[in-house]
Length: 168
Image (tube, rainbow, N blue to C red; front, side):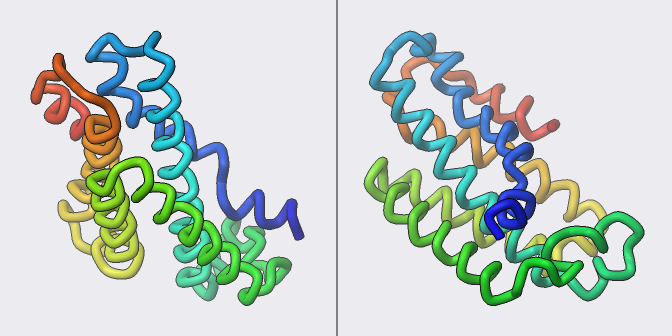
């Protein structure tokens, strides 16, 4: 069951959370150990939340995924990972992530909550609305960058980086 959960939480997708480090890099604090560790913790928290979102999305799409040529082999769609275990894993990930986010910074928690809620809306409704779907996907990267600025004392960070990031 552990291997099935690992496939479901999609750790390969965690690389997207490197955007949390944007403020650290552009504020020239990459060698500041304290700032680096806080930012690393922030990226890890984003990874936990993203993994919970992947689980919820796979649960919501399990019926349609059963008809898809490749998605039918995903642990939830194939029935190999019981729904109860998937729900439990997603909830546990969030019960770990949100309190840790608060401990890092309440503003960071607020951004994490916006990221999570927007992801839930995207998975259920917004991905079916042309143009809105693309804007929401871009906002996920932007939220990662913004979250990184809440974690460290940023002194040199151009608002243009927000614009450029939203192009991803």
